[in-house]
Length: 225
Length: 400
Image 1 (tube, helix red, strand yellow):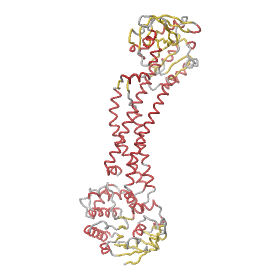
Image 2 (tube, chains in turn yellow, blue; image 1 turned 60 degrees about the horizontal axis):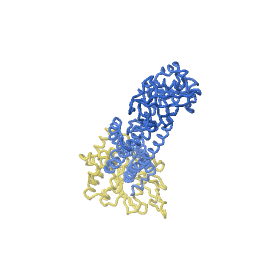
Image 3 (cartoon, one colour; image 1 turned 90 degrees about the vertical axis):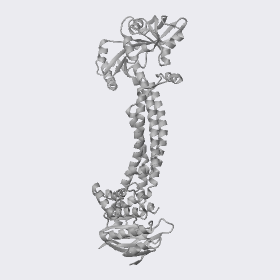
Image 4 (cartoon, one colour; image 1 turned 180 degrees about the vertical axis):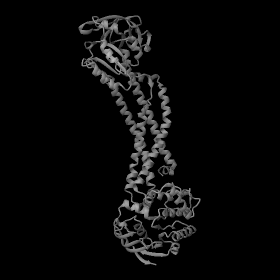
């Protein structure tokens, strides 16, 4: 079942001296439970593409249908709410809230969703357990390793029960052991929870784990295998 | 979260809160001292003139003896029976020439009811030589500067000469029974007190009871209400003048002094405002990426704005609460034990017709207003993160 349907997507930046076509007519369909890597050289448009899918940027042309919603039609406030309830994000630099503990970071998104304290605490505990962080609940990000922080970040992305998780180069700042652990964990979550993961990456190890690889160059899909 | 954000950089938060504490402590001490001295001035002034005075209509604008009136029991009873009136002091005042030997000086001769007057104004406590007035006794209490000028001593007789009531001439000779030292140099140079009945006989011997005014003292807080009640009850023949009119010069100088204090405070608060603002600015800009992530994952900008506002308020609250904790006991102590000035400082106070006491006020309004100003400054500083977040570009921040 298709959860994301992208039709003829364009994004042109006009605030530069010469207009830049970062995304140039991408059409793509993502099925539920996919473990997909968006790959391509630097400047190929993969981060812009991911930002468009995540509703962080608005397309110049084309449609992004998530479920039955075309996110192009949502205003900025509706987009924030849409992201909160439908999209999980994992960032390259983890981007956890430094003043909150691991469990609070995970629970934070559920707090935004209005889930009662007791329930969100329980869910956050379960997610930390699933991501192998049992016993680290009360550590602040500064007290965790990069790999552990990225695991918290994945747990946070899962906490909102999203339709899919967008991960922008999630392993870029990790050593090989942490990368391996993280990828195994995400693959496991993909399998056990049927959670859809979409990565943008340069990392060969991520590509090796991915079941589908979409290669982008000059803002266009050049291969999809 | 706002509270925790403050402690990301403890040292910065401590420094900002300390600047708020220092400003508040300074402001509270300054205002407490200012208001303390105003309260003392007003209290002393009201103690002398009463909360209000009843005169013959027109007397206040034209203080001539011909605008004196004859008191009657009905009038006094009418006023004294009003709820809130504590007591009344009748006066007869006139300007006369006082002569001793070959020297003459213009003085303000005031006839008072010795016992009642002393209970309120406590002239007896200001006597430096001789004794205070006695009812029915033909003696005078004079300011020490008058005594010095005329070179007159206790027991010597002073000739007084002036205009009597309705064109009569008032001339008398009375012994000096007491020399007093008042706080005000002007009073020392001008005031001569004598028994009311004796003065009445001097000014108009043909009918007793001549007065120029009745000072009315009332319970605190009832002044405005009583002023209108008394005005209504005494009728058109009499005017009722509030102390605010009688001491308008003093109130004017208080206003002016208060204004200069406010300018000083404004400068102080501008410095504090910049302190709070610079912290808020740093806290906002350094979390650009964090804001971007929070908005990306679904936090509404409004919530982010509220968090930022709370951060500013918390900094101000830490400063305000600490400032109040430090200042309140000290001001309470100084309120109960005002500092008595000596030497040149005392002389300066006396030149302003003030007792040489550095008094402090603990009026709740001082604490409220200063705390409120600091909190308002914090809110003002929070405008920056509000505009920052509302105009925030998530993608630019994420790319950074």
